[in-house]
Each structure stands twice: as structure tokens, then as C-alpha cells.
Length: 340
Image (cartoon, rainbow, N blue to C red; front, side):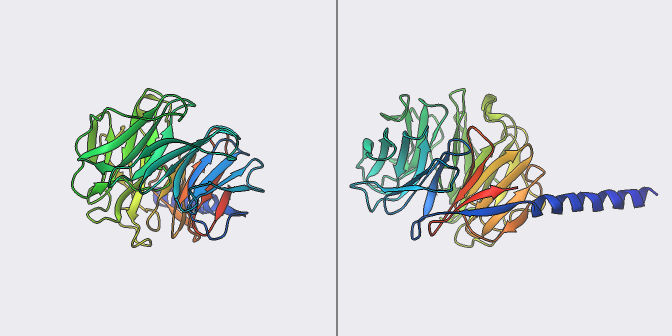
């Protein structure tokens, strides 16, 4: 009887898992053909901004039904890999490569003010994140033997170097300009970020710890991190990290890990996502969504088990800061919305 009961429980769990996955789908939204989107900022259920190459920025105020498209004047060839929006008129964008640039708009994208420029050789900004409307951080690839960290306390109007107390980067270690998902700033003036390349580590509280992810090549390592309780001290205890090898985007070896003790120890999934993943977000409770160039996966148990539910690729996924909506953005102007 016990064996039969156990089998029934297993079958019921499988049915519930399949039902949960089948219920997910991605609704296509009007995008911008020919543009690769990596920047995404979802302010609320109806307001979202996207940014990408060819100097492109887009804004929707109706939940993605329509977008206002703009090309940042004077920066038509720049790739804006990250964006942070605060409302319908205020946003900050980050351009990769040289020179390092951060721009800010206060009029809905009609004009952009240069708020940070770095002309040093080898400069490469990767990501930015704000803990509130005033305080934010940005990270860039190592330069002069140190991780580049910047800080703003005035909503992105000005940026200053942040005192770097973190361990020196290992040779070949850097940060992917993967949609800003590799950095999280917390309410208690703390920042958590993850690296990739020849070495893949998580940095927090002035320390760095190796992650159990695929690493050793320039295309490997961590791409994004998400925290279940970002408003708690050190982001609570439940963190999830995705990555892998973007050069082999269908390989699932070493592409995901999670911690239940605030980074003290890390585990890998029983059934990982089906390939390299560059974006991840908590949706509700233990439910997670992860995306990459080879598809989109869903987990209902905190990341222990993943199921592919879309083979369409996206670079970034994000849940609304104030709301429940989940949006995705990717290559060839692709923008989508999670429908459940």
C-alpha cells in the first residue's frame, strides 16, 4: 500500500508540474526589427523601457501594446546594454565599449544628458542597478587591476568611483554585459554581483566566492543573479544564478546554481535549464523563469527542476518592480510578455 501511495504521489506531482508548465506562454509584442535588445526596465505592469544596439531606446506605457521608439542623438552606433527607468519620463542608460558612457533623460527620451564618461583605454561598462530612486551602482570590467565600481546618490545625475574593498579579479575574470542581471543593489547599502570568464564568482560584503558553474573560457560563467527576498538583509537566504557557455547555448552543463543560506554554500539543479541562460527572475513564491538565446524555462520549486516551455530565445527577463507582469526582450527586436 505504501508503495502504491508513493507512486500516486509521484504521478500527481508530475501532473501538477506539467500543468503548471503548459500554462505558461510568451505573448509576442511589437518590437523593433533588426535591433538586439539587452536592456529592460519594468517599472510597473503597464510601463516598461527597453534599450539595445544602434542607439535604440523604446518605451511603452500601455503594457507593451505599443512602443515609442527613439534613437539617441549623437550615439546612433552605440550599444545600450542596460537601462534603469524610474517613471514615464526618467531613465538612465549604459553604453558598452569605449568610451564608457552613462546617459540620463528627464523628458521621456526626447533628449539625453551625458552624466558619466570614461575615456581610459580598455574601459568597458557592463551593468547598473538602483536600490531606490536616488542610490545606484554600476560595474565594469577590471581596469588597472581592479573591478570598476561606480556609485550615484542623486538618481544618476552624477557618478563617482566607489571604494573597492573586494578581492582583486583573477586573470581572465570579467563581467558580462548581459542586460544588467548580474548586479543587485540592496536596501542596506549592500551590492551583490557575479562574474564570468576564466573564473566565475559571486561578490558580496567585500568578499568573493567561487560558483559551481561552467568556467575557464571567455564565454563561460555567471550571467545573472536573482534574490527571492531582496528587501531583507543581504537579500535573504535564497539566491539563484544562471549562466553557462554562450558559445554553446544548448549545452546545460554548469548553467545554474542556487543557495539557501545566503551564499555560504551552493547547489546545482536536479534538472537544469535546457541551455545557456542570461536572464532569470522570481515570478511568485518559488516560481522562477529563466531565458537565453536557446529558449525559456520554468521552475516551480525554487530552481531544483526546470522545464523548457519555449524554444524562442531572449536575452533578458524581468518582473515589474511595482506589479506582477513579467516581460522579456532579445535579439532581432523581439519583445514578449509572460502569460499565465
